Image (cartoon, rainbow, N blue to C red; front, side, top):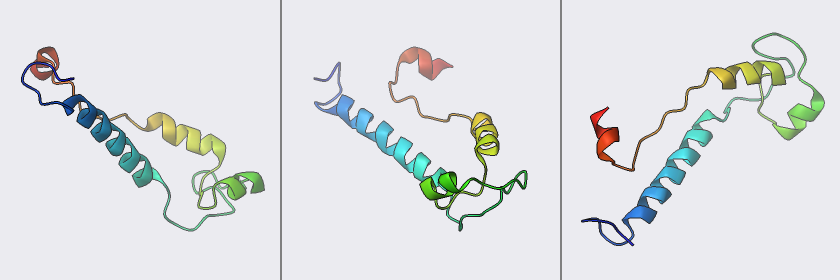
Length: 87
């Protein structure tokens, strides 16, 4: 069901593109280096349970939480409303 001049399936295409962008962003944020026994940020030991769950991790839970808190959400407004385009 499309609205206005949009073709059929346009809304689903927007949803699919949003999901794909989120997956690509998440994959891009995954560490690619070898894992570490010590945190890169604070130098504390990384617990073995965390290393087993995330084999490539290089940060402890506390330092990763700080990194995640500093990450800004970036996205594209695909809704295309007139108000969003004027901002």
